[in-house]
Image (cartoon, rainbow, N blue to C red; front, side, top):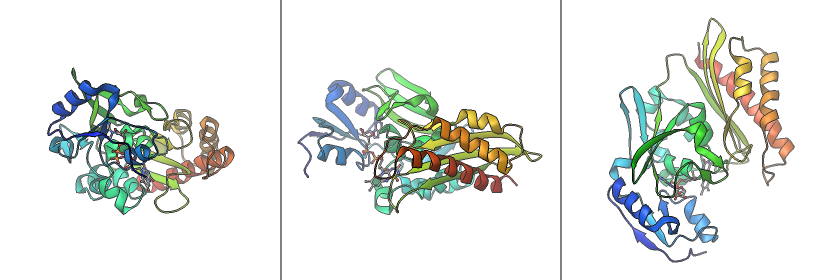
Length: 287
Ligand SMILES: Cc1cc2nc3c(=O)[nH]c(=O)nc-3n(C[C@H](O)[C@H](O)[C@H](O)COP(=O)(O)OP(=O)(O)OC[C@H]3O[C@@H](n4cnc5c(N)ncnc54)[C@H](O)[C@@H]3O)c2cc1C
C-alpha cells in the first residue's frame, strides 16, 4: 500500500524542526525511523500533509554521560542502544531489553525516541523507562522542559508532548553497584510485540529489598508502574510467598486489550508471571 502524498522537510537542527512543527501544527508529523509511522500512513490511520524528518539532525543522536546522568539522544537507534559500551556498563537493562525489541532490520532504523513518542502500550521502552525512573527532555518554541516517564503517557497513542514539541533525549541515572535488573517479555515469535512483559530494577541490602521498580508492558492502555507491588517488597526478603503476593498485586492492576496474542485473562496471568521471573532474574545481579 502507498501512503497519501505529503511534503517532505529535512531540518538540520532541533530549533528548525520545532519551527516547522509550530508552523504546520496538526498537519505535520515527525519522521524518525518510520517503523511505526509509515505503516500507519499506509493504512490511512494518519495522513500528515507534512513530514519533518529528524534523520539529518546530528544533535539528536548518540549516548553520553554528562554531570552524572546518562543522556540518550532520541534519534539513537535500537542497535546503537544494544551495542553501547556505556550503557552495557552503566545501565545494562537497556541493551538487555533492546535485544527483545522487534528484529535486526527494525532495530537498525527504529529509534528509542520514536518508540517512546509513539505512545503505544505495546512498545517496550515506555515500561523500561518507567522502571529506570527516566526523564524525557522535550523541546518546543519556548525552550526545553523535562517530564518523568511515569507522567508522560496519558493513553494509547496519547502523551504529554504538545503538537509543537519534539522529544530530544532520554535521561537516566547510572546504576549503583550491584543493582539488579531484568526485562522479561512473553512474545509469540521473534519480532513480535509483547503479550505481556515486565521490567524490574532492584536493590538489596542484607538480603532485604531497599529499592524496586516494576514497569509493565502491554497490559493496560499505557505502560505502567506497579507501585503497590513495589511497596509490598520494600524491607522484605524475596521469598516464593512474597513473589505470589507481588504477582497477585500486578494482576490486580492489569486491564489489557484482547487481541491475537490472547484474551484479557491470559495476558493478565502472564503479566504476573513475567514480573515474578524478572524479579528472580534481577536478584542474581544483586550479589
Ligand atoms: C515488524 C515490527 C516489529 C516491531 N516490534 C516491536 C517490539 O517488539 N517492541 C517495540 O517496542 N517496538 C516494536 N516495533 C516498533 C518499532 O520499535 C518502531 O521503530 C518504534 O515504535 C517507532 O520508532 P521509529 O523511530 O520507527 O519512529 P517513527 O515510526 O518514525 O515515529 C513513531 C511516532 O513517533 C513520533 N516521533 C518519533 N520520533 C519523535 C521525536 N523525537 N519527537 C517527537 N515525536 C517523535 C512520530 O511522529 C510518530 O508519530 C516493531 C515494528 C515493526 C515494523
